[in-house]
Length: 115
Length: 108
Image (cartoon, rainbow over all chains, first blue to last red; front, side):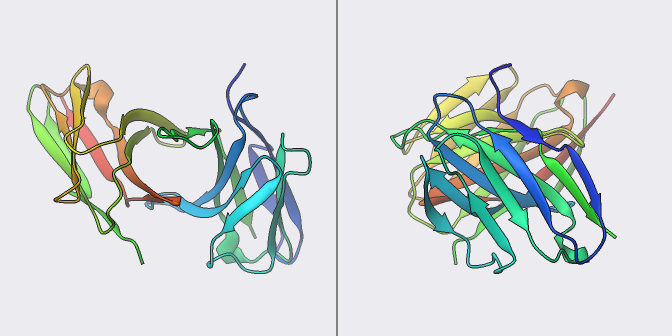
């Protein structure tokens, strides 16, 4: 399968715990994006990487959120001290190197439930 | 702050009918993307519109872009049940900004 993959697909955690999600992009894509989507809303941008460099981070992202892409391939998104408001679908997308067409291809998402 | 507004938010239409979904945005970007999302699933890319006047068609769906009006449309022709889904437009302006989506239900 050459699409974007995410792991885990579902995560249930208790408030205050830390969670980490993984995203593996399409192999030739050097751009990787993280989004959060809540019910009835469109995806909300969190951050994106070009290779291993984190180029932009949403102002909405609190200090409890951190993302890494250490070798320019897979990426991890960590949420520390989770809160109930963090419950959402976390989507990862990847795209080819920046150019005219930056079409993004999305993974299946990780659904987080914070109890 | 950049805004992307879609209307309608909910659309129920009969099979065989035509309808248009509108996407208005508040930036001068000329890059707009349409995605489809089925319940509980991720997003599937439908169209990439990269210039003023761009028109793309795939099956019963046709998308267009008017950058001067900051408007994109997704036109549905002779709707069928399989088109039932939520449709998002997204504007690229350094990052991607998504609309709130249009939930389409096609009734037999």
